[in-house]
Image 1 (spheres, one colour):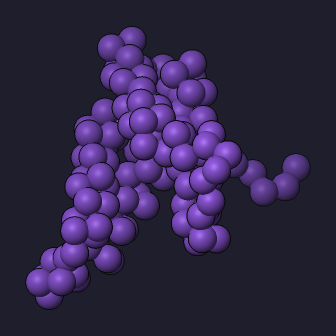
Image 2: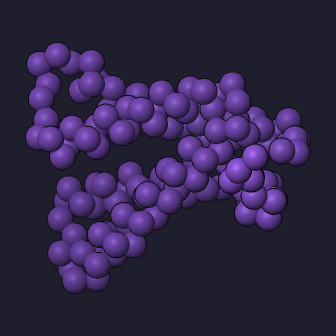
Length: 134
């Protein structure tokens, strides 16, 4: 994979730091609280977001190698906004909880801005595929 300029790698690190801080303030207090319980579906969401923040720590050290983590973050939020929030908003049924989630998901715009899309295109889309067999 070609190297990025140091300023672009550091910009990526800022994206990982945004995930770490944001999820650290919102998700981790409930994860470390032994008295906190969740319905199974909410527990899945909390566990996935906690894992995302832990993997973002690796992104501070290896910003380019962890790019797929940022792709995941931008993609799931874009899908949620398009498939859940937009129809609710269009129908005039966006309740306060969904509006809050939509605002949190719109933070993905900041993450999308730090991704070096030209590098991502060359390294993940245009690069030759890895062999399936030896």
